[in-house]
Amino acid sequence: MNQINGCGERAARRHPGLSYWTFNWRKGGGSQRMIEIAKARHFYQQEYCGCAYSLRDTNRARQARGYPKIRLGERFYGDDST
Image 1 (cartoon, one colour):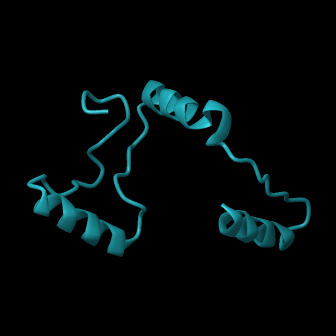
Image 2 (cartoon, helix red, strand yellow):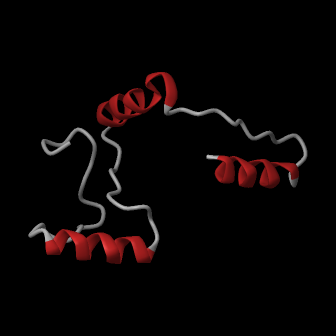
Image 3 (cartoon, helix red, strand yellow):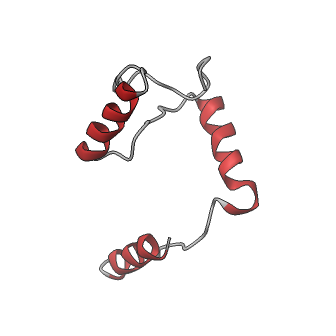
């Protein structure tokens, strides 16, 4: 969290009038609220961090457990599986 906030603060300093809000959305039920909103709005649910290495490693782990590979762009919050 500190690393992410530090990056956000440094990026915001480069742009006059822009501020970065360091708020931990995971506390106080924020994560659950995020899931509720994502399900209600049918947001895309990414199953890995977003980098090619994570996709590769996640798919390897899934295959080792007998699960299918991630299919990009096909999983959304609110679907039967989420």
